[in-house]
Length: 452
Image 1 (cartoon, rainbow, N blue to C red):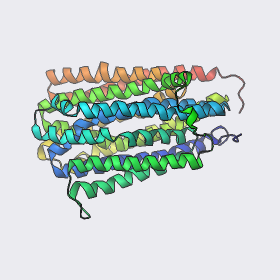
Image 2 (image 1 turned 180 degrees about the horizontal axis):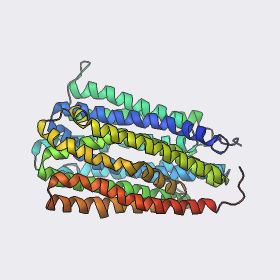
Image 3 (image 1 turned 90 degrees about the vertical axis):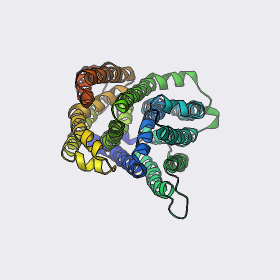
Image 4 (image 1 turned 180 degrees about the vertical axis):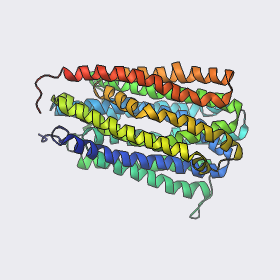
């Protein structure tokens, strides 16, 4: 029988840092890859950058499908380990592989049948349509790499082995950057493939990283045993996974729809405005990713200690995570406000992009004032099995605030004011997160018989 997991015995601050720091580093590297990837694509043409930008909602959907499975696995597996239900933990891990395969088949179908149509609904620029169709087709058809990479990483995170998860992320990101340089521009004797090369670089790197993640799980993850007999779905386990995970997926889907809608608003105003939005989402990932990485370490800590009945450890972990997240986000606010022009020039921004983008980045960065608290609060809801609360906050933010406000501001004050919809939405989300966190504390306080 495995010994007591470190999530139940290590001092909380040290535990959070130990769990979160590898994930934060890997997320920063992943964000750096996103920026470098867009930097390379921007050197081809602004149309190429727009084509990749318009694909971003589909990327979010892919992440959302993975998130729906991964977040549920993370919380349920950690909870079962905390309860010492090791056989059920093994079943959860194996079911994750089956559910991941189903998710990939859904994305594969979209890539085969809908690539051309997807771009035609957003633009009539034939160059953007052709570049985007190629990029989407390759990325979706070979998306099994990112699907299995994420699920194998979640198994490592759920058992407290975030350093191994970091190794997988670094492997994929570094290989992706190298392959971008080789395949996009035709270095090392290979032909220049442009946007097609960017797509191939991504899928090859994801497949290699997924293989590394599988090997690490098989060799070093002693808390779970992946057995073929457990791969077929258990209805009760699947239900529990998606009770927590489905709301997380819906959150990502709503974000994808929001971005799709904004792309359509902005591209009708100016193709450069759509490019600015794409650049912002890549830049913001450099700020948000460390907080998301910390959440990946925080969720199993909360779930494990809730299953083990350690109330004080849960509260301390939440307070520390909020503190760290707020500091990170306020640092991002300063960088985005003072260096907006320099950040845009990284992506070979045209004069029109600079004119639109400098004020846009400064307005959008106001979201960061409240975002750190909001992100951690919603992660607490997920960890304690109340993913519906996280989903409701996301739906309100995306559908009831950002999209309506974008239309209202564009039609009344002009497209230059569309960016204000984001800080307004973050303020509304803050109110919801304060309420939800109080609900979660009430649930934590019901734990009886504190063990430590």
